[in-house]
Amino acid sequence: MFAHGFGCDHTMWELVARTFEQDFRVVLFDYVGHGQSDLTAYSAERYSSLSNYADDVVEIGQALGLRDAVFVGHSVSGMIGALASSKAPGMFSDLVMVGPSPRYIDAEGYRGGFSRAQIDELLEFLADNHLGWSAAMAAPIMGNPDRPELGKRLENSFCRTDPEIARDFARVTFLSDNRDDLAAVSVRTLVLQCSDDIIAPVEVGEYVHAGLANSEYRLLEATGHCPHLSAPDEVIAAIRSFV
Image (cartoon, rainbow, N blue to C red; front, side, top):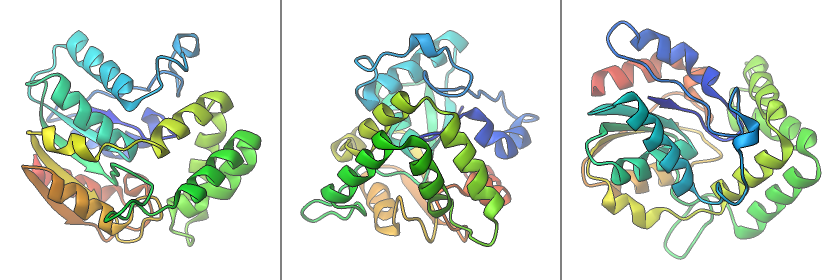
């Protein structure tokens, strides 16, 4: 099961997911409010925490009868997958977290990469000017300035997301603190960390690895926050060697 990150949809995983179709049953989906999902099913009240998104993952898994599945989550979906694995023991035997972060805001003894003021400014910018935010943030998040087409693809994905839903999901994502939830994750986990990621610095990936009871950590040569787009072959190789 491949899960997308903020402002994206299932198509972001196509380059990676299709290589596993011969050996695995592959599940791709869009969170409610994203991609091809039913926008009328979205409720800001219901989706006010990552735990509610994890409930949807569990519901999908139950509908498909998943047992001992592999959950691959990008960015915020790394934590959503962690929560889902705790909610439904036996559904997932393995987790792969790509650029995960349990908390984006710095705290005493913890570096998340952003101050509270920076996150507040980011959220205000997104709420005031969704298209401007998308244009300004996509390229830095993607990294790889020598390949501007990648940043443009991410920008287009951001722009396709409903502005109000994007605002809500951004608040849930960037204000969450799931550090304590790491201890409840018992399944085998692979943490894939990019070497130059403005959203989830190396220290964050190392923190996630240290907080999990049964995890492997791999620092990728890929840069930016979306290695499944910028370096799919490296991500595929890492997942294959793990599963």
